[in-house]
Image 1 (cartoon, rainbow, N blue to C red):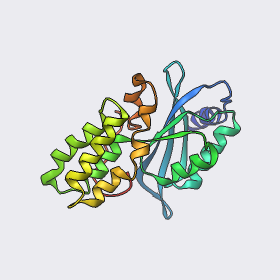
Image 2 (cartoon, helix red, strand yellow):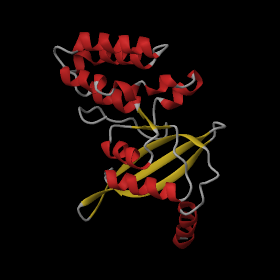
Image 3 (tube, rainbow, N blue to C red):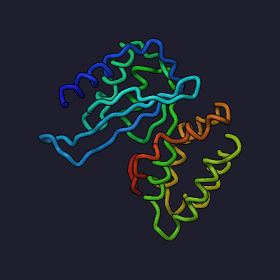
Image 4 (cartoon, rainbow, N blue to C red):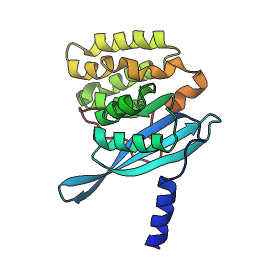
Length: 210
């Protein structure tokens, strides 16, 4: 059974991708509690959205945490097998992914994952103000256009910046990546806002990269 699975995986991991027309990709690292020697096991996952809207698993590979080199090696392998640069990549605050994309697929736009971002920002705030901040963040994310979203960012900074500058910086500094989806047709906005699929638990609140 294991041998059959390994053969299936090798065929999947070596298949030709030159006929795939991925417009968007969602990239995420799935972490496990299992430790192998000194490293914690991490599974790098990429899901692609084709031009007809269909979604398919592009790659699953083990990585060293979510390091730049682990992501870059996976992306280089996809490029060697014929994958063209996607228009947009959606991911969280793991800096290794974005550095690897700039190296391997420099033309690909970066969209930050809103589910991770909201959890990250709220983790920088006391519980007493999180409900109001969550509403303010939703007004940015769900604004009718980019101009309105930027005004909502200004309002968020005005309301929370004096007491909680670290939380505000998480939004202001990433504004370009958070609002990238506005540059595309509105019918694509929902799936471009997050790489977090319903099958995965929501990220925990925490004031770290996100």
